[in-house]
Length: 364
Image 1 (tube, helix red, strand yellow):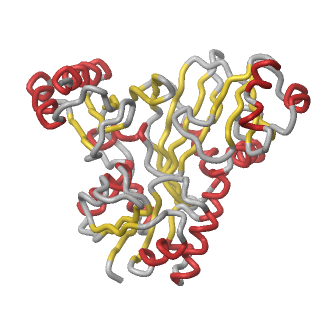
Image 2 (cartoon, rainbow, N blue to C red):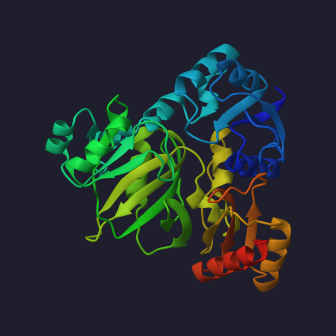
């Protein structure tokens, strides 16, 4: 064994997981099809496709344990990579069964319903007539596989609107679900290891153009629902659970991600164990830590068309807001709307103000 932990993926989540593991004295490696990735800047890395069982097996053979940066690695390719490497599935978090359930949004919804977890009603989008009968208008249609930050999602308020989307769904692979009017969106990070479970606080999330813009503390407790959702899809792993809070106070599960999540980045600076610490501990079968810390808020730093030097912009923002904490991901191109980093602060107002100062200084 050369490495203690393999990260399948090379983006910012792998980067921050590796940094957490290194603080524990662990040796890490990442696999990613790109070069000079955020993860490769902080640890050893191999270049290879994440849907290639041979590439996956090559990294697994060198590692004592493995985990994923995202849920888009094909579960069958991952299972075959484990087989080729002689790598026990018990050393992989999350497991391939959990991954297969989460990758199919309809199967995910069905798992929640079977476990008695409240979630929007959803059916396969096979015909206009069937979804009109079972769901009705307005409805939301989604690609069952892939899609994030609003990608692969469309509104259908009328039959005409649903028909206009026919080129997307007529060959299958889409679902229709009921529209849920909600007061706000929530998120909870759940660390699950069999019967052992630890949850981070319930946070409110605010979106702009389908991308998380701000994460802040809230007075709603959605932890019980989030735990139920995590247990419905798996028995071991770190789960980012996204939820809807309706006007009547009811909590419904929207989606789940079996890995560190953007809505949990505030834990890097809240004074207690971070979501990445828990992720590493789960991968290595170490006891979970009690997630206790102070209030923090997080604002995402998105790519801008007129972006200049991020280093100079961070210095300028810190001169105004010395207690803010900036985290930069090391991506080479600041495409508009791309998650380039985030800033944590004690209050949402301070996080937003620090970000505004950063953007002013970042503009060329």
